[in-house]
Amino acid sequence: MSNISDIELSQLRLLQIIFETRNLTRAGERAGLTQSAVSHTLKKLRHSFNDSLVIRQGNQLVLTPRAESLQTPLNRWLNDFERNILNQEEFNPASTQHTFYIATSDLVEQSIAPPLIASLQKDAPRIQIIFIKLDKHRIANQIESGEADLSISVMESNHPSLVVKTLYKDDFVSAVRNEHPFLKDKKNIHNFCRYPHIMAGTGRDNRGTVDKALEEIGLSRNVQFKVANFSSAPYIVECSDGILTAPRKFIQSIAGKFNIVHFTPPVSLPQYSMKAYWSLKNKDDPANKWLREKIAKVARIEY
Image (cartoon, rainbow, N blue to C red; front, side, top):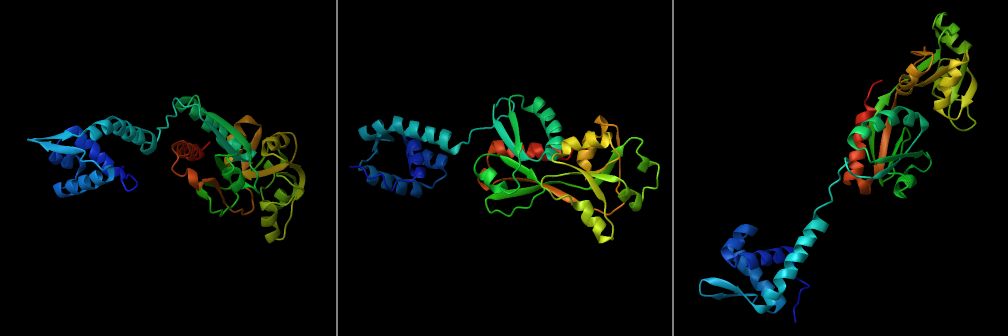
């Protein structure tokens, strides 16, 4: 009875070569082994299969009946193993119909989706991109559950199952409608605080980055209008005296579509980092890696 429990893959690969070449010297050369190593391995294989496998007749090796019965299934098994197990299926963006789910906010979606989709139309016309709402309290869970392939957020997460990459750093600018009276005044901090302000965000709190910066210098502003999504804020800017302070990348992406003017706010505001998160288990996945590289590229586009 054969004892195959201790047979190694490299030994089976050498046996395949011996069957093909019928020559131990050439088999050793192809396998990169010394003659001593070939002889030692063949001895172990003979013991494992309880068969001579190859015998010398004159100047050539001849397969035993057991070896002849092994040759075809061994070739098929090793070739299938190499093709299906060792060789990872190639990811071809030009032909794949892969669907990617990206969890993010409307702010990021507004800035990144147009250049990303424009790029995919050329390079990956059959790929489907689905943006879903980012749950800032469940970043890791959304990714680990498969709900999202990638998350893009300013949120910080040190979850051990996630990998993080900074896509870009951004600062803030303010925007008002054309002909806004602020544009005719001195663009100082006091006039900035005198007009109503527009804020985008969820929840009932109407304090944000601007308010914290103003508080440090003993000032405050009147947040008269608050919307849940950044995408609706420009419409309010356009039809009111409200001042919107938002990320530069967002304002620049929509400036040409609205009758608005943007300027540097007269108060020092910190920069922020926009980050991409993905699962550690997908670090080497070709499709996920391709998506990450594509997003990183379009994230660097300046409007």
